[in-house]
Image 1 (spheres, helix red, strand yellow):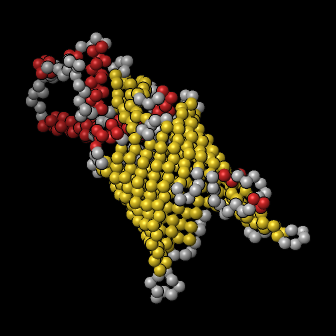
Image 2: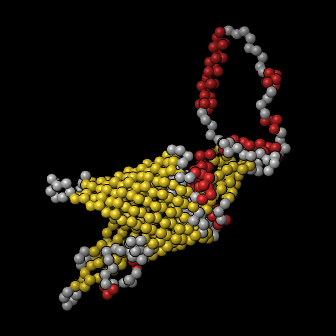
Image 3: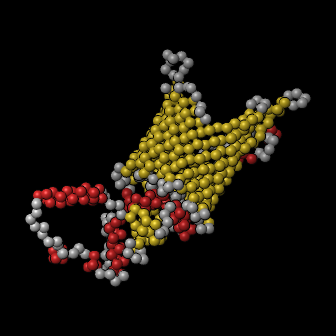
Length: 471
């Protein structure tokens, strides 16, 4: 438009905010001159009279006073002032109207509060991690008066129908130690491919609810899964969320089903799993995640008959799994992070049935886990992620692993905005596993893959080489 000034893309957030302030001042009829630096003649007219001749002692006292004032003000003068902005309202552009309240809730920001630029960028990263958001950005617009701003959040949202597809080709090498220490061991080379595809639909319900329906299929291992979940965000206005989930597995595959005549309960009872997941924010980038899961596990055992002999019994008994985790997350994307840190620490407790030859009982299993990963932005198109995990399973199995992953954007920002993300990923990990007091088993995996993501879903093609040995 002729005569319209174009916004400088290199202008900092503070500079754009100051420009918005000038517009507010002029709109309220204030003259820009009253904010200009005074003319030198004005400074001279109010300059103090000359000190004149003074004694050496008086000079020393004045110098000491000036030095004291300088030392007192030096930290404030030399330190970088962090600009902050009073947000009088929050507006969301893009996406569907049903997602706007969810976006505001996930930002963990509230209108009428003051935030600095770092807090605003952390809020954008949290929005970016929502499962239905592809990209998110923010800007400040002028408010109703000087010093007030409107936070505008621009999002790009996935389509109501989506597809997730993944194909992995693996080459594995296993070296086992023979009983005779002098032997070099036996080596096995295997190749296999695993294909997974999931199709789903998403619908926004009410002010801050999301309903998801997903069907998943895994080739070469028939185990179709159908899942329905509902998530309520901003629960009671607390920025917390609660998810209820129910899933059906075609073949849970736990310890066999037995013959139909051996079943003592509903044959498909163990196909269903129910779960509740709650997330409560405890800080700008910290949250507590708790979950409760109930499923059924087929258990085999034998029962003696009065006339002699035994009867084979298969029963589906409940399995309860409870989790509690603390999560610190500043990453800017769940799939393609280009910066940030993610730390999680917590515990899982499982109550499940156990069976001997003719006896049936219950057991409790505890699992503790700690994970840490850090992503570094190398260039505008490249990122490097380093991390590690530690697992203690019921004080009998310990597992430690370290990993690294490098990713690069293959076709630049302009094509990404038009068509979607296309990235190459190369990574590897080293895993150490120990069972009770046995020695550690060490395994290594190298993988490379191409990943594409757009508003319709995610496609991943991966090739990996696995090798493990006994240390």
